[in-house]
Length: 314
Image (cartoon, rainbow, N blue to C red):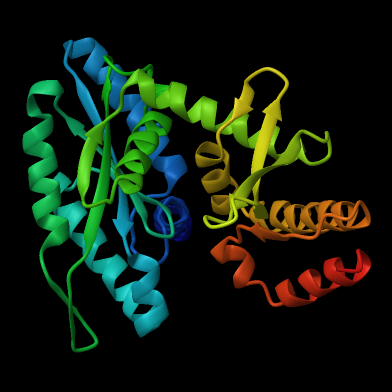
C-alpha cells in the first residue's frame, strides 16, 4: 500500500514538473511586453507553414509591419504610453490571425506575421491590416492613431522561405521612404536598389581617405563690371569605377548615415586652403560654402569653422 502511494506521488510530481517545463519553454518563446512569439519561434512556425503550403500546393503571404511615427509617441508621451500602444496593436494583430502563433514582434516598432494567401488576396489582406492598425486607440487618456508601413513577400513567387522575411522588410522600408502609411509587395528592383545603396555607402565611407572628393568653383560675376567677385565651392566625388557621382546622389546618403559632418568639415578646410592660396597670388574674393543642417546642429561647428579660418589666415 505504501509503495503504491509513493508511486502515485512520484507520478503527480512528474506531471507537475512536465507542466512547469512546458510552461517555461512557452515563456522563452514569447516576448515579455506583448506576449507575442519571438522572432526565432516565428521562423520555426514559418518553416512548418511552408512545408504545409508545399504539400497543399498553395501560397503563403508574409507581412512586415513598421509603425510610422512611433518614436515621436515615445518622445512626446513617454515609454509607458508607447508600451500601451504596442500591446494594443499586438492584440489586434493576434486577433486577426486567430489562435495560431503566426505573429511576432521583431523590433522596437516592427511586427511580422504570415497567413495563407497569394497575389490575388494581397490587396484585401493589406486593406484589412491597415484598417485594424489605423483604428484609434486610447492610452493614458490620450486618443491616438497610428500609421503603418506594410511590406509583403509571397511564397513561393517572391523567394525561398529563408529570404521571405528579408524581402518583406525591404518592401516595408520602401513604403517608409515614400511617406509611409501604405503597403508594397517585394520586387527584384528593390534588392538591386538596396545592394546599390549599400555598395555606394561603403565606397563613400572610404572616399575621403582615398582622396576621391574634390571641390570645383563656380564663379560669381558682378552684373555691372562683369568681373568675377566671388566663387561658390561645389563638392564633387570622382569615383574610380562610377565616374563623377552627383551630389544629389551621395549628399543625402552622407546625411542619412552620419558622414556629412566629416565631409562638411573637409569642404570648409579645403575651401579655406584654396582661398588662402588665391590671396597669396593676389586674388582676393569671397568663397561661398554649402552647409548641411546636420553640421549646424553639431555643437563644435563654429569652433571647427574658426579654426580653419585661423589656420589659413583668412
